[in-house]
Structure formats: structure tokens, C-alpha cells
Image (cartoon, rainbow, N blue to C red; front, top):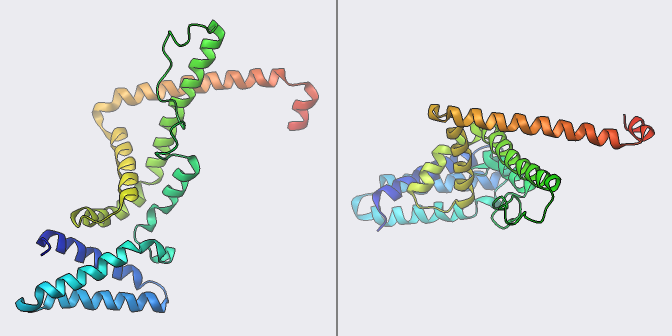
Length: 226
């Protein structure tokens, strides 16, 4: 027999799914919505002798529907609000398999022993680009996805209580939430100022390099690009 808390969470999730399926004029989706709604009503109003079987049948329908949520049309799919963020992360190549997306760690002095001073400066600049990119990407994605994460938060709370699978969505939600918390904590004020200083320093160096590249261009090439 399912625990009471898990049963309640799954049923609440089922009610949210029903509300989403009722959107639009999709006949099949509306039929599914009515089916789930009937199972929920039967489970909630069943007599004591029939309650366990009605609840098990209701949960089975909801769990199967949740397991096939990605096959639903986008406008009624649960957690669809996270789609723009997921697509953006995918286009950036931010995933566990892409191990070389960022430097794992900066090289040690011994590892740079054979490089000239000018080369070391460029290597350090490359690492600075990596750090700046991480901070800018995390900040931009966190702020852009704040509304979406707040919308799906009630869904994810029921998912966790019901022990349902939503690994990707939960990971992305944590990514955004942690990024927002880092920027909002008062005790991180100095850390934010330090981060801003690093970004400003990087911008100055990038501008200097950009000017140097333009100076290296033949005059006619630069003019033709304007």
C-alpha cells in the first residue's frame, strides 16, 4: 500500500495534469483529462473497503501519464515552462557528457614552466575568459529563468513528495535557484563586488585585444568590414 503522503502528492500532480490537458481543443487530451479526473474522484470518494483499490488504480493512471509526458503537445505538457531554458543549455553544450566545456582547473606553475612570460599571460587570459563566461552564463540564465522556475515550483514539490522521475527538470531548477540565491544573499555582497571587478577587468583586457586586432588589419580590410 502506498504511503498517504505519496498518494496525496501524486493525486495533486494528477489534478495539475488534468488542468493542463483541458487547455485547447485536443479531443484526445480532453478525453484523457476526463479519465484521470474520474479516477481521482473515485479514489477520493471511495468507501473504506474500495479505497485501496481505487487509489491504486488512480495512481497507476497518473504515473503512466507522467511517464509519457514528453509525448504530449508542447502547449499542455507538464513543466513546459522550462523548455526555453533547457533548449538554451543544450545549445550551449552544458551537460554532463561535455567534460571539456570549461577548464577543469587552472594549470599549475610547474605545468607552465616551459612557457614564455607573454605566453603565460595569454594562458591566464584564456582562464579568465573561462571564469567570466561561467559567471555571465549562470547569472543570465538564472535571471531569465526565474519566472519559469517559480511557475513550475509547485509541480516539482509534488514530484519530489511523490518520488516521481524528473531528474533533468529538478537539476535545472536547482541550477537557477542556487544562482539566484548566490546573487541575493546579503553576506555575498563582497563576493558579488569581487565578481563584478573581475568582469570589468576582463572587459578592459578584451577591449584592448580588440583594438590590437583592428590595428593589425590592413586598412582596406577594416574599411570593407564597416
